[in-house]
Length: 181
Image 1: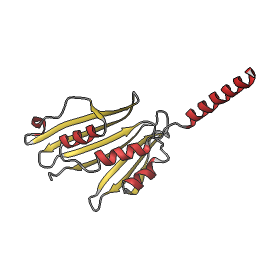
Image 2 (image 1 turned 180 degrees about the horizontal axis):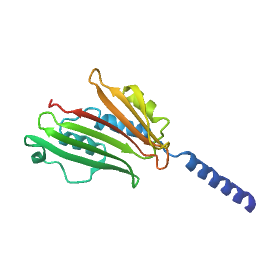
Image 3 (image 1 turned 45 degrees about the vertical axis):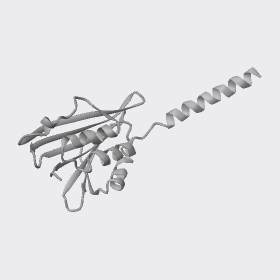
Image 4 (image 1 turned 90 degrees about the vertical axis):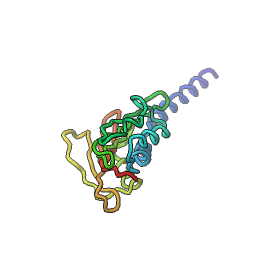
C-alpha cells in the first residue's frame, strides 16, 4: 500500500512539473492589449499617458507628472513605468514627448517578457489592425524585427522588436506628432 501511495505521489509530482513546464505563459496578448490602451490612442500630453498607465497597474519610475512639466513653449519629458505581477516585472512602458507644446513629437513603447515571437505578429495584425508588414533584417538570428502601417491615411508606422531567446522580451512602439484635441 505504501508503494502505491509513493508511486501515486511521484506521478502527481511529475504531472505538476510537466504542467508547469508546458504552461509557460505567453504574454503576447497582454503586450498587444497594453499597447492598444496606452500608445495606440496617441495621447497628446504626458499626463494622459501617466493616467492611462497608472489605471492599468503601471508604477512610475520617477515622480508624478506635474502641470509645470507640461507648460511652456516646448516639452521635453520622458515618462517611464513598470508593470509588476506576482512580484515579477513582466512589462514596462516609456513615452517621450519633445517639441512645441501644441504638437510635440511622441515616441511611445510598451514591452513585456514571456512573449512568443511566432504569435506576436499575428496578434499585432489582428488586434491593432496593422497592415503591410515589412520584416526587417537583424544582426542576430534570435532577434526579430518588423514594422506595419496603421491608421487610415495617417501614415503612422508601428514597430516590433522581439527576442526568440529567454526571457523572450518584445516591444511594440509608435512615433507620432501629438495634436491637442
